[in-house]
Length: 217
Image (cartoon, rainbow, N blue to C red; front, top):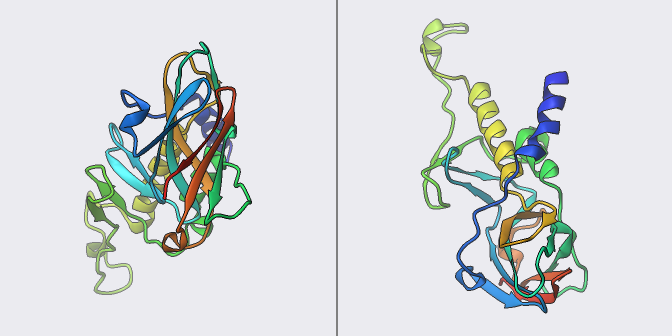
């Protein structure tokens, strides 16, 4: 437990967000506030983690968005997930973002993960191939042939998947800090409904850069 606590405390220090695209216009949706240009993309429930992870991870309880802030005439513009809210299906309620730690817990804890079998989507992108753990067949209880040398058990692979997903959720999250130049990262919103029920998705920005509303769907 002590090791886990230290690991979770250290994770935020590793966070770097995502690599900003050249301009706000390069995102699926873009808009302008008084002192910043904004870019955003709705990613459903997937956390696409290229680079060392080279995989996509999924959460059943959170919506995932990538956002980018490009300061214009205000040097050092602060950036924070707290500057964003989400409106769904035209409702007046605005959803506040969840922390990366909450999403990491969703990925690590089976109680949060629902019925989705553990699996990693290799090769990046949501359209890759899903590789899920496969349990070796035993001829009788305790059969050593049921666990081939060099293979992982289902629990081993589940743990590896969960750890990688939790780390990616932290690393790619948008972090609080001065803007300076463009900043981008993932923000998460707790929502357990079905994606097909989302007919209208609006991202509300209200921060030091001004105000703007971006319609994502």
